[in-house]
Length: 411
Image 1 (cartoon, rainbow, N blue to C red):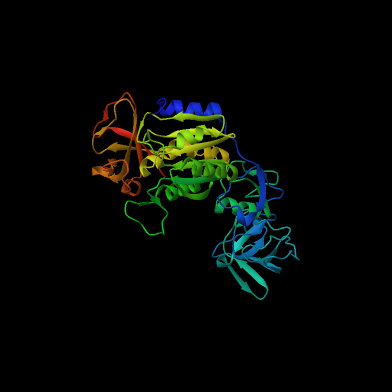
Image 2 (cartoon, one colour):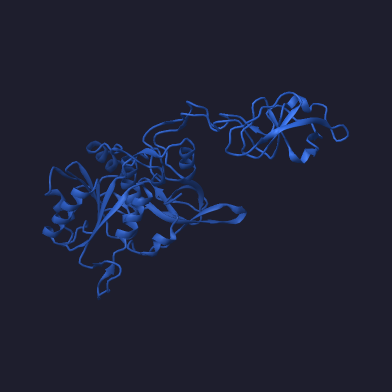
């Protein structure tokens, strides 16, 4: 029997009272390894980007005022004083009445303040005829136009994607400081559970939870450490948990938390150190048998064996902790509004979470459609659901066409 069922909000409060998550240590890594890591410091540019004024077109660098009055019937004549190519320092300067040939990306020579495109010019015997007036800075990207020296371009806590890594490369940074990725040990329990790839004996099932939970850990910014499947034996389980606590920042188990004779996880956890079990049963559907312990200053989340229940509780309780440890505390689960396509009923006295899939209805309205799950152990619910809808303990049902908030499993 569970010690005392608490609400999901009370469970979160108890966890917060015992464990205040904060980002782990900082590590400097090569820029090519920085993708999907979290920046640990503000990044300030040590130079202007671009570091020099450059042409954005192929054409001729000129003084803009030398082109004033030029048109198709009355071109302006300028003398060509040289050529500037990409990657070289200009060896010429532009004075009144002169023009220098430039290509896209080439530095603007001293004295020039605009570039006239090739299409609006004609070249004859060293003379350049300009058939249209241009303004100052036209077709020129000035030094510092993109990033100014001393400007803060990225902030601590930002997730580094391809664009952010590109910015760091533009600043000349070969290494970057990021938060260490939290290790999350994942293990399964139960005599009936078999690792995928092995022959499935009668009465056995494949280990769904370890794989779905490990992937969810990755999606949350953690690194899963899969330890395997362990029998319902207290000595073996204690040995596995000891290994997990030594190798990881958080531990996740699945199975063995209900009220059957083989459900020994809560008792085993409670015997491994103070304070031991801090939550033993949550008034939710699904997810009621969830157990949470604190051992050696590390959280152990023991989730139900039913795959849908395990993944749901992960998103409610475990994911926020991993995000904090990974330095991604500002990242919230995506949520959107939709309309219920059918009536959804709550379990009496328990916070109820209904798995839903999204589809477009009449008038292009976004509908939240309950996923038929049968029993809570149904595997296909995981693949069919886009997210879940929450029904409060005091609410009996959500009616058809009622607007609901759908918490998405992924962005």
